[in-house]
Image (tube, rainbow, N blue to C red; front, side, top):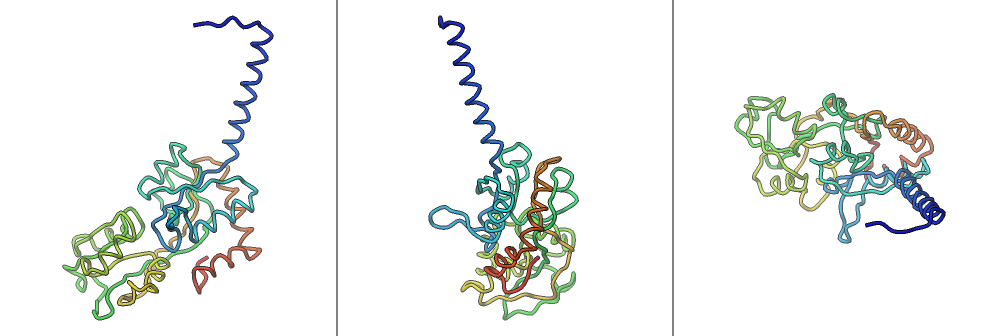
Length: 255
């Protein structure tokens, strides 16, 4: 089907359409979409109204303010994080993602925005020897596709019965119900859970597991956002905004 439109009018309409398209593309390009997994308290949780809140959310907002950028924070399940980033579903991941050699093959990372060690949690009324022989035959859990699960599989595969979970909350539920003997976890979320009513009967077992873990912001390969976020992290650390956010969630520095 064709329409009989005079040349001048057609050109004017085309110019308006192109202008609108240009504005739309500019607007989209200027908005940084940031993915966060809302099942990892106190770094990110989804409240009753469906809004994300937590340390990662506050850091993301502070970085966007420093960059004077228009940002949109979206909730994204953990397993779909890197695939979603790579197909441009969003532009950055600020979701307590550890820098690993495997991940660095497919995404770029900013400078760290906090450091992490692993811990083992278990019931206060049980003693454990944290060794191959001491844990042999026990059931030990971890959050799937994390440095915790990787550590467990690398060091205790064949020694313990490994149980992996799609969310940290589900791991805590099995810990509380006694379906696992121990849980390997990042220290900060584990510390937060121990302060809760559900965590009162549990404690850290053994020493911190220092795997030199650095947590950073993931962006697509070659993205200018890598340096932009790194510069913004340095700025909020230097002027005290980072320390203020840190103090809302932890009585110790995690930087």
